[in-house]
Structures are given as C-alpha cells and as structure tokens.
Length: 284
Image (cartoon, helix red, strand yellow):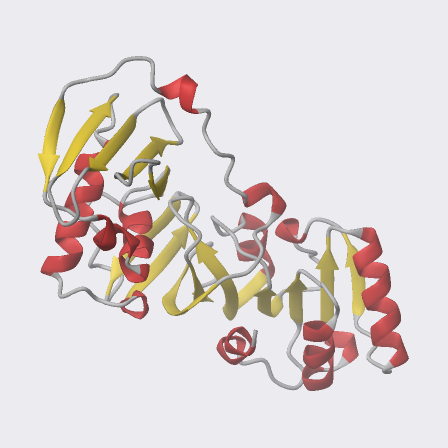
C-alpha cells in the first residue's frame, strides 16, 4: 500500500480519486495530505462505504465517500490530479483516463489473466486520451469483481487429442515470478495452470480466452523434456515458448524494466522504452 502511495506522489491541494475505499485507511491518509475537499473515495459495497465513512468522520477526516463502481470513477467538479486504485485490474478503465488532467498520475495494481502476478503500474496521462508509464514492483491485491478470471470449462476446449511435439522448457521456468508476468504481457488473452498429477507427473494447461485454442505440456521425468499437445487457431504453447526464449535472450529483465502505453485503441506493453514493443503483444 505504501508503495502505491509513494508512486502516487500526492501533495497538498491535489484532487485525488481513491478507487476502492475498503477500511478507509488510504482515504484517511490522502485526506490528511491533500485536504478533505480534495479527496473522493469510491467502493462498490454499500456496507463497506458506510463503515469507512463513519470511521473517517470519527477522526475528523471528512473525505467524500461514495458507493458505486470505482471502475467508472466519479467526474465530480473538474479533472483529478491523481487516481489511486487499491484493487487489481486487468485493463485500465477508460473513465479514469477521461477524468485525470494532463500530467496527472494513475497508480494501480495491474496484471493479466495469465496468472495472479500483479505489478504496481504508474501511468502519466498526456491529456489526449493516452497515458504511459513503468511497472515499479510486484504487488498483489484483491481483483476488481468484474476483472476476476472466469476459469474455462475444460470440456468445452478439449474435444480432440492432437499429436505431440517436444519442448526443453521446464516447469520451473514457467513458475519464475518475472517470467510469469512477462509471458502474460507477451501472450494476451490466455490463462494457465501448472500442477502435479497423482503419479507425480508435472503438467501445465493453457487456455485462450478469445477462442477454443488450448495447449497441454507434461513432464514425466524431473528435468526431462516435456511432451506438448496443442489445438486450435492460436498455437498457445508456441507463443509461450517464444515469450520464454525472448525473455531469456533479453537477459531475464525484471518487471521494473517493463512498461505500458494506454490509448483508446488498447494497451501496449514495452521493454525499457515505449517504442521497444514486446513481440506479438501490441494492442492487448
């Protein structure tokens, strides 16, 4: 939480929208720093909002506490200098982009449906409907209700069993924290799981969220080659394997080497600078 506040860099007199009231602690800190007249905090749960409002009022911190969809924001009177989100998102809401002034900051836990790995994203708005910024640190918050991953129904995907190929990629490579985050950026609209079967065989499954493409990998032996099965128009394992190889070729950069550009057309991840796009990852 304090990493998010540090990235937000809010100061006296700034107008701040706090998405996700929770206990009210963050709204209280922002009110103390920026002034009660400058802080609006929003939570989707009426009981949570009511309890937070009472708690803040007892402390003399009279922020505006609203019940509603924090992803839709609150236009209020004029643009905000800062937007802070205290729940995980899988895309940046258009409303936030429209409600922050040019040069304003959005600080948010951002991740993909590939895994639960989130990172603190600090975006600077440019005033033309676009924003860009770097990931700063790995963090994990409860996701927005509408951004939670709906797990695919396995039987809807696997209706035929294709022939197999091999891979030298190991499960530990897939489980690396930074690798998981980067694969999620590089291979959009995919979710996966890695587990051990009852006989000790390690396995991974991958499902596309845009069609019925899927892939499965099984590793019968420790450190041995994996057997790959994949089906559908998206060759999911090929894309994951290519993302792993690309990340290794780049020297295994940490998540703070990556960033995101947001436009009305979509979201584009990059490495080191906005023009250096990840292979195959444009317009998530």
